[in-house]
Length: 235
Length: 260
Figure 1: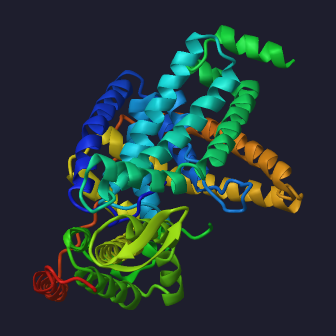
Figure 2: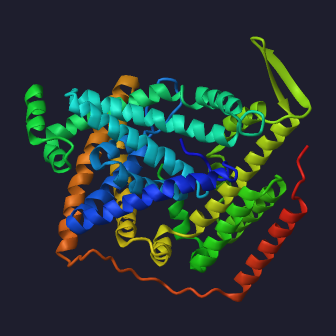
Figure 3: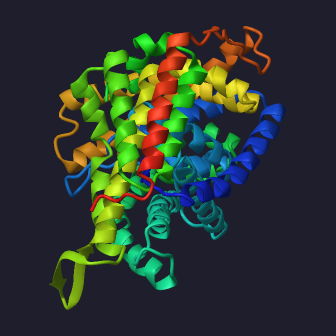
């Protein structure tokens, strides 16, 4: 969920920038290191970023009739790792703000925190942990991206309720009651959409394994043995 | 989604103006709007930016109002929550649900109106930038801001490929639609998966081709681009100055004024 321009008052929009900027700087450092080692990744990362942008501008078919968009960041986190996803997330969010009027400049810090950092990080941590327990690859992707999508909305609810607690001043009870209100509206309505996005990403991955599995091996998402096993299971 | 805001920026008469000036106007509006405690300055900013965008930049009014309504859903829902939850003071109206008193009081309503005003002013500032300045012009600003080369480069290539993939996605979607691919929920989900997967595979191949073609043209990790010099003209400074003075004086006059 994009928080729109001007929605977060001071000092919250500054604080979210303070939270996001170190992570972005670390992501840029990682990116620079990766680029100096393997120059051929620059076009690939750029194209992947464009893919995330286009994916997130497509409307998901939704059960309730309202339309929503996939975030796509969970998939990027699994493919590239959370720190590079944070950098890609910044660029995608700036473009979404400027081209599609989603999001904003002063709220960029908060949006990067929820969609570029916290959501992807959770997805990545879940993916890695579940991969260790030999969970089915597609189930893992499904859960990781669904959780990332949902956590993104929970984070947005936290951000909104920190900025607008019940009673006007920030207390624990005020924060909690306001969080319940925002979370009921934004996070619970998002559960079916998160499941949709998870299913979508898992099925996209299935196609990718079938058609172009070498990509996943190159990115260290899967080992070549695992790809062989998945392909064997399908045929 | 065939029209991106960038299309209007490319044809805007204000495109020829200095990028830094436009950026300064936008940032100024956003900062004043977000730090204002009364809904009046944001409305003044929104009005000025709206006139600047529609009158000077020749954006169709209907289109402008339509994009300004884009955040409406999110903003209205959140404002209603804020109005009910926060604040103290005399209660304006309320009702009982399951033994809980839900009411809107003056402070809550004020806050909701303030947030609404800030959002409108922020959006209008952002639209001013995005409807007058194509992204290509902003890349030189990013470079001058000393962001790392790899970051700016990835941003530039992404910009190019967003439009390529949008076209591909629209074509695939059109082809699927005329074959009844979005007939009901199940088929539309299947179509969506095919669209996403094909887009991913295609974009990956495109990325590999791009690397090859750039390498064969001696790409060494730096894309050098032409940065057109656009000096700031006197009338522009004057107009911007007047706008700044008006907004700042409204800001200081209405410092603690509230709507109700």
